[in-house]
Amino acid sequence: MTPDLYRRIFHFFLLAIIISISYSGSLDNSWHFDDSHNIVKNKNIHIENLSWEQIAKSLYSPVDGRIHRPLSRFSFALNYFFSGLDTTSYHVVNILIHIVSSIFVYLVFFLTLQLYRERRMSPLIDYNIEDIAFLGAIFWAIHPIQTQAVTYIVQRMASMAAMFYIIAMYCYLMFRNHSHKVKRGIFLFLALFFWIAGVGTKENAVMLPLVLLGYEIAFFRIALFKNKKYLIIMLLLFIGISISTFIFMRGDIFNYIDNIYSVRSYTMWQRLITEPIILVRYLFLLICPLADFLTLESDIIASSSLVSPIYTIFANIFILSLTLFSVFYLKKYPILAFSLYFYFINHLVESSFIGLELYFEHRNYLSSIFIYFTIAYYLIYIINFYIKNYNKFMCTVFVIFVVAIVVSQGNGTYLRNETWRDEISLNIDNINKSPLSIRGYNNLAAEYI
Image (cartoon, rainbow, N blue to C red; front, side, top):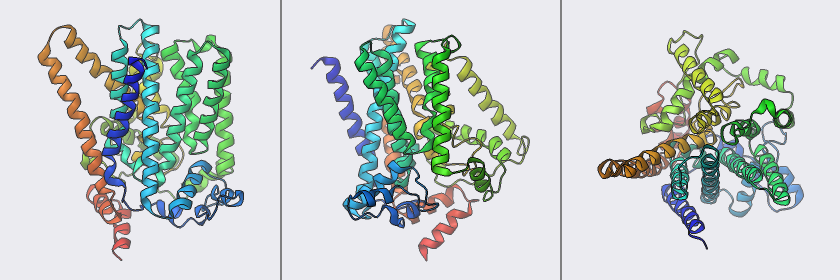
């Protein structure tokens, strides 16, 4: 075993240990909110054996009777088959999914840094690359905002889709980096397989082709309009799978959009101009995860116009500016621009025109991945700068700062999981942080009754 391989395997074990410690307090946490109709009361997933008839039944939504997110529903059915409604097994599976995702996040970061070094003639050495990949993966994996995707059992739909998505991205990068035709073919097949698996887990995984277009510009440095064949293939894949998935799982697209807005207190336009406010809040939480702002419920009210409330227009201008920067500066500033590009592209499904609820933190599980890649890269860059300039004091300050971030994030995640302990603790937290949201009061009252 080479030293480099040994170091990477050590990083994998360290990732698994740190994540396990951070989430160790969540194993006995109860069911919450959407867990009820998706798992607890969903007879479709209460399978008694592994016959095809029972498995096929589990793939259907209990709401509209359509096949809907079949892989995530089947995973719940397997949990039920082996352990009934004991929440511990569901939490164990969710944590394992999170660990696997973090390992592939590390691998994608590692391959990206290797590519960046080769194409940009960067002075990064292998040791730096592994440190950045590990630190970025740790920042992402134990950030308190991720508890909603990991500890909230039904949001396995989000975390499992992200797992398949990041595995597909890793396979695509291996396909692009290999010269051997057979291996390239295998990795391309695996990329398509895991991408489709991600889409079958949750629909927002359809965004991968658009992400890969940006990645090609940023790191492979291709000119898309000079590679029209590649551009057309990726766009056709995205459009074809997106429309097919939506029709298959939701039925008529326009009818679905009309129906979902019929139960909302806001219009499509109002949602579109409100989401930039929410994206600003998400970005703030990703960088500064203050416990007072982490919540399941939100009392954010949809803006009625671009100037009502007045901060709506400033949020829209800010997010539009970041979006334009992320697109037009992919080649010039690949690390920073692609992290924003990745973030906004993966928010398109749940933070744009579809009439979903305005705010949920689990929507950042996938989209935030490359934000931490950028933070880790620049932190290691600063530390290396002070090492090269023999400034031991500043180097020590930044090392302590990085360690403090990791420790505080792990502690924050552990404490956040205490809030998810049961419906009473969670809804009291919701009421304290979102006092204008009536659902927290209703849910708490129902639990007390």
